[in-house]
Length: 492
Image (tube, helix red, strand yellow):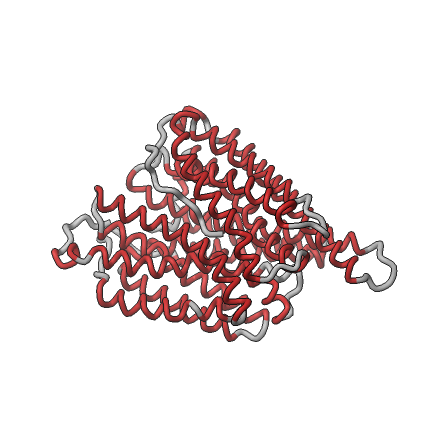
């Protein structure tokens, strides 16, 4: 990354530059949650099956996570403003196409394109911030604003998704991105300077394509076990092709002159342990937004607006307990706080797994969300600190990118597993029905599927605890970042 002094004109308008990139980042973060509330409406309108609905989320997250590191390298190599603008254009155009999608297949395709646009925008925007603001008080303020956008975008997305779906239609959760995207592009050309990193040579497109294709096929294989069975020729064949693509990714990275991921970085135990734990945590977290949204609307009869409001305590709790985590990691221990957080989140999911067909929000949903929010708040900050501890300055960006990718990929894989569990439980519950199942029997079976998914999600959180205990050594994280490190709240 270039360290040349900023031109005076750029320095004078640096806060305008921050506003421009934060507008685009807000759009990307908002999209991570705005879709969840609209899922039941999308399912009813486009005829998604219970198992295929997850692709509305997973197509986006897999493309976002798979191409995120490529986006960071491409921004340094091709030009940060150039890639930022291109990403906003791709994201905005895909949003328009999503709103006009008249079939489930086309919505999935354009959601993947939207994820690719997000993978271009997000790292380029952050890179613009860090090159516009030099180290010191101004950069700290800029990064605090950046973190606040992540928190605010997630919260606004939940409420906006409900308002737009209920009072307009689900298509408007995508159309709302158009004026934001157009404004970001016009303002970027006016205020954001172009910059490149002179030390960056080439981008690893082959690596990004192979890992994204491999992960996508793996998710598809997991989902199709509902039709083929776990030991069928079709499932095993898909899994082997997925494995071949992931092995190809490793070989490409080992031989590439400009690898997407320098594999040697995984020799750092703290980084590897934190990322594997985050894979498990993200899987459980995605389950909350996905299944709880459907439960609230299809079982409890909540409107989209009521559903959006119902999730706000979860977001508020994550923010509050992230602040608590920052204050206590230095005294209690970063590893210990993370493990406690994951354990508490598991309890929250177990509480949600008890939500019955005739449940209520206050008695059966809110307690689980509040406990879950406390656990997640205590988890994200310490895992972020662990993932970036013992990393050299030159690998800091790579370590952050890997951690962000782990959130997206872990969420996609976890959602695939939990959706498969939910569908299998629902099918099993209906097998004993005589004749055509009644509406009450179908609802009961659906809820039993949700309960199974939440319970397995709790297992994923506990898996995160085990991974942290086995892989993260106390001596490796003895040096903890200061308490004023920025709050990290990933979009769901």
